[in-house]
Amino acid sequence: MCDYSLHAVASRPAELGETLVSTDFHGSSTRGFANQAETDVAVCLLPGTELAFEKNVRYRGRWFGSYSVPFNVAQFCKINLQDPADHHDALAFPDGTKVLLNVLVRGQRARVLQLPAKASDLVEPQNAAQQVAVDAV
Image 1 (cartoon, helix red, strand yellow):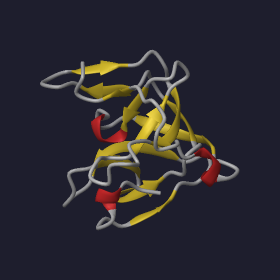
Image 2: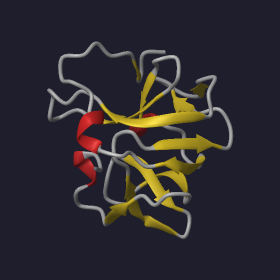
Image 3: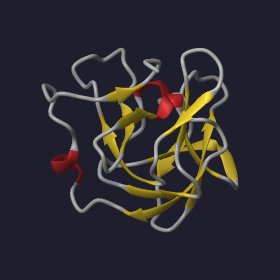
Image 4: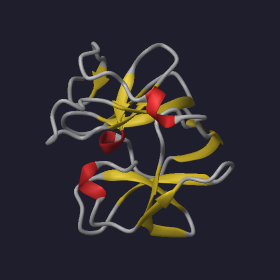
């Protein structure tokens, strides 16, 4: 549910309708989601969870500054599963773009719109082609 690097951080599953914020976690180099009321607890999403952000989603670039995708709605997914040392948590957008949670700009708020019916059907196959926005821009 949560990226491998958040296993040392307290966590819980996401709840339908709750508002999350993108944040860093103390003692971890991983960025993820937390509830605004308890920012030290990672909120873990299942693949297929749909999120609505307040604004178009922004992510960090290679050096300084940030970029954005032209969408404020995304679906949580897992990518790069064949490499256990990579981050796996990502957001998939309507145009097929995928952005790792680890590169999201901190402080973005998103509401959980829908939880998946069955998570095992929504994990991306390991050999699928991927378009991932990480430090490529």
